[in-house]
Image (cartoon, rainbow, N blue to C red; front, side, top):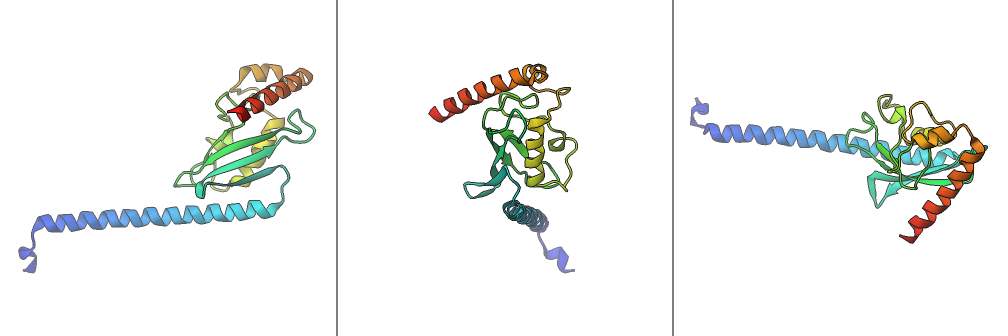
Length: 183
């Protein structure tokens, strides 16, 4: 009957502490597995040799990356370079990272804040995708936008006339990049 000599408040407190410790261990464990996955993806990205894409952690934080994509050859985006911000959630890869352009990007599927309309970053996300897949998909999207689902309706309407589109795109790029460098 030793249990009769135990203060129930202490027992409840110990049970709560044990639950919290277990939750923290799960959180630490999942955080560790996410970090391990991101480290692996970084190595893969560095070793793959894909031209025109790169990404690295920002400020020693493995959950925040800065990506770079070059416009694909043979498109109006050729010779243009764009920076991206990638933020990974604690449950990555089971949830998609948040990705947005930090370099202003005039594009049918990119709004003025750099938000991107791309199905694999939303409802079509799967844990099989990785940073490399995201960057290659975005690079491909530059040359092959979905004009039926635009975030930038002006760019979508202009897309049909590639000569005019390229002229305006390059003017905006030069202006925006120069303006951003002055800031």
